[in-house]
Image 1 (tube, helix red, strand yellow):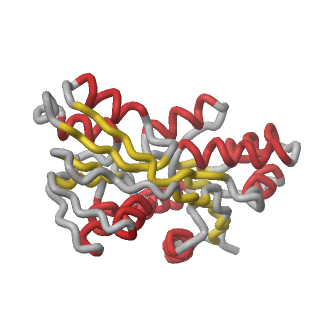
Image 2 (tube, one colour):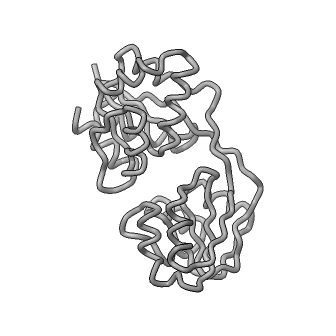
Length: 239
């Protein structure tokens, strides 16, 4: 019987895609969405020198708002870049490392005196905005959507507490926190962490790893590329 690997992507095409990837790797997918998108109705500014998008969701909302950027469009990574191109936008810049720190490194030489728009969720890392500010840019942030925990989230926490998880793929710091909150709501937080520590835990990048380890979760793998397919492959390979 295939070993069960949990993931926490929003309940849309991302969860369906993740399930297909995990299944193709020979594992049993357990989809437990820990994030739901609540749009704010705001639209990104259009008149900045550099306009940063950090997620496919942000691109979708910007496109729905009729966004027409005047400056250089910057994507945090290949998935966001692909969504931008699909929506008809040019992608002018993308960091080698798909993280907030990578974005700062990509733009810091151009930052002094530049107007930079950052359009993202309400849980965006301050590493990006603080880093660009420190580099001399005039940074404006637009919150396009809030990320909330769905009421039904928690199946994976139960599975972990009962010892039924072989692996877990955390794609953001917030998925870690929401997993633990869902476990706490059920009175099984410690048991769920113990279950994770008997399983193979993967995180999408170093910031997510740091949050997980702060809460006592032992992280086994972090892929070189911050994309779900690479994360799932790393977790299943370690099983």
